[in-house]
Image (cartoon, rainbow, N blue to C red; front, side, top):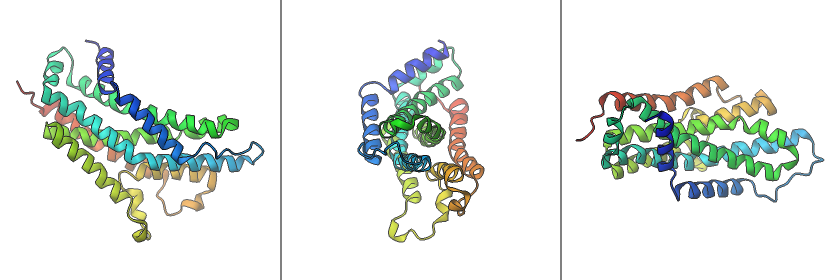
Length: 263
């Protein structure tokens, strides 16, 4: 079986009806709640204000999307491994002339790439409705959020995969995966009444990717003095990738070398 065929089959299985439809609708509704269609800026405004509005929408959208993106990737990642293990599908897949690495990569791509594209395309569409007169600015600024969405998806998938490979059961894996995302989200979003000077938030797993985006836009459009409290862009990006790749690395090693398939 070719890798392309494996990837196609995995993607169709993960995003079978109604998962794709429901996810697309929920992401679209989320984008509308962030920027209502009535908030259209007339074309005669200054370009700087257009930049500011678009960047404000993008950063708010990325921040609002974090929890939803984390939960959906955690659930889909868990089902992709724990469900296949419990139902014996992994035994069938690994009996084919395919390496475990290809099976793992196909599952990773089948979960993270579609949800990343759905979230990004929805964001661009919503932006285009409000800023139809500045599409060049929309696409130029929206480009930066694409890797951020992918990093958030990858982190959630990595945690869910590692948990599901260790638990090997659907229900415990889903509960543990979603609980881990919720805990990370609460750590990254303390109550406003007790917020204070929480500079550590930039170093938390779910906040670091969004802070990276804010740092990039801050330096590009608002000046470096706006975000003096944040670490450098490279530091935030490295930290975000580390959070995502470390659990993915251990999940990959366990799947390719240690996982025992039941007979």
